[in-house]
Length: 293
Ligand code: AMP
Image (tube, rainbow, N blue to C red; front, top):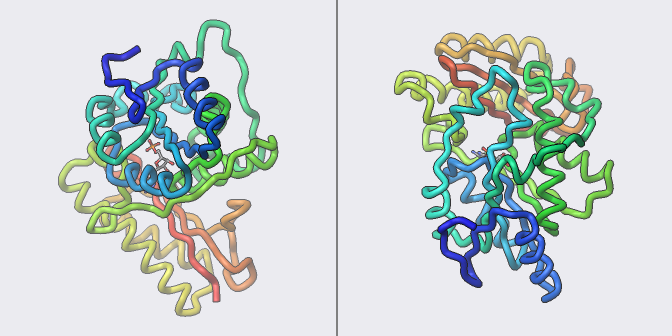
């Protein structure tokens, strides 16, 4: 157990058996439970997810776990920001009922060897460069669902491909949890909040506002009748590059299959604008759903 306060209203739970016992007690009392999975380094966006969870259920669990299986060998697992004390203070203020804080050894003990195999959705967008990332996400999220047994789980739309993959997983594997999407929470200049924003230099931080401005501009073009996705993507990439961003991808795609859309006039009633951009070493993602009239 950690040195953090344990009480009826506020529990920090680092082990699986204790977490399951707590939730079983809540369920036995007829209470509904919502889970907000996070990797910590919490910001206002995460707290909004917790607030939404509170409206959905009687008890809210926030998991704080930097999951090694979703980081590639050249990614930032070791330098991912960690601040459990700060996270617990914020979660105390926002009113989580339990914080699940397992160690890697608790989640992946000696002999661990089972994963979740995904097929189509990771073949797009971030999955193209982050090999194995979404399999790691699905693996840890399924474990969190089995440990926390939530009725609801709240995921941010900022990680659009992630929430789509989790939605698909719970359907495909008959997992009894309702996935709820939370809209993207943004800084005043429109940059999507992210734990990784702290890595940005002041110049890159200012320049990065171009990402959301570009998403808004392309959405306005589509509203205005633009239908050639290729041309819109070219314009978007040019705008971001002009502000110093290194665009990994900017796609206009179907929000269910994540497959590229060529003719916006000849697709469903919504398209997803979605992008990954590096400023310096910091990789940022953002997206916007656009209704097609
Ligand atoms: P993370 O710990 O950053 O991996 O994120 C934990 C959860 O918070 C995920 O469901 C994210 O999609 C969500 N999240 C992170 N940043 C934001 C944001 N700016 N707006 C909405 N949801 C977010």
